[in-house]
Image 1 (cartoon, rainbow, N blue to C red):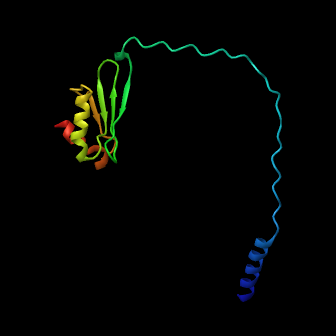
Image 2: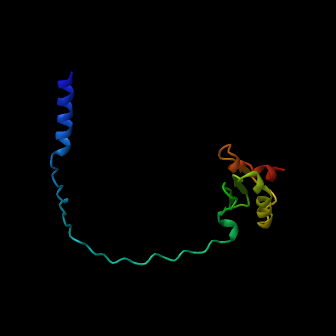
Image 3: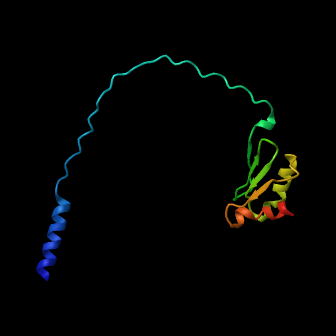
Length: 123
């Protein structure tokens, strides 16, 4: 048994002490460079009105998250609401944006820092 143990130690230590080969750098195959004239991209046309644009608001509610989507067509969707103590501030933000009604309220998962502030919004 002692002989097997000593043989195992010798093999392990011998393998650790063997010199390593240096890895050679990868070969670089150079490809011919082709140049092509590129025309500038056309300027974007402004949308017909602000009602045609999806607006995203990433609202600071402390540790948690809150996202307001103002969709084309006037629907508003609130995703998460931060912690419960942020409910008043979230309601004030929605009022500042002129939002009286939400088409949907989404709680991504049941953690207090995501759905706690929604309590005040629903009330």
